[in-house]
Length: 248
Image (cartoon, rainbow, N blue to C red; front, top):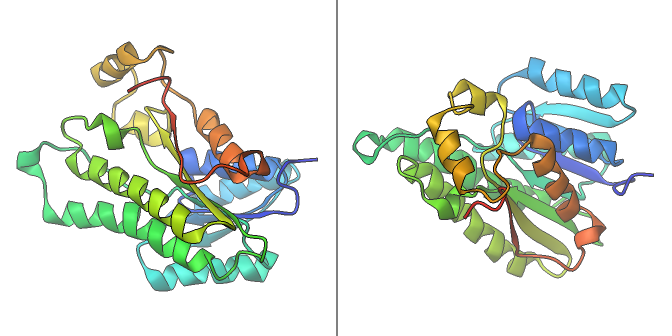
């Protein structure tokens, strides 16, 4: 028996990376999962196939979280398939790193529209589908919100804003809906490797500051999300759980 049996979870940005890992973890614990994805249906279908092969239930729904009409459709499809939503994981996010002299207005809006507005729109829509007993919202933030690394001015600002969103919504939506955040440090994903961070000087610098002396895994982030999504954290809301090997 999984700890999420009978629950329905919507995970945004779930076709790969951390989002896919979260979706698979929640499904393995009994939740029916709605995998939202932005572009790659093929990647989303790979995750669905793995979940169903292992006895889980999942569907994939395309939609940009930065577009209110598409967010509405994601939740309509969730209700059509499973009748309700108990858990929302706001994982969808974009990023780009550049020094201040190279910051572009368009990049600012791209990141804020997905990372911050997307989480707000998704939470707003989820309210219509939570059952009477309430549910759980887990925002995927980042240790970047407090590390404030050079070259990350836009991304770090979006994640600091998401920390504030978590705090505000926890007060506004309580007592029935809990809102928390998981803020990972460096985690090995497809994007992390593609950007050249793996085995780089960037990685060595951060690992050197970590008491646990290694980068994290997708599963370790997913474990933290599972805790905050489940009744094991039923008296926890408004919290920011930093999953970063002790990095501060």
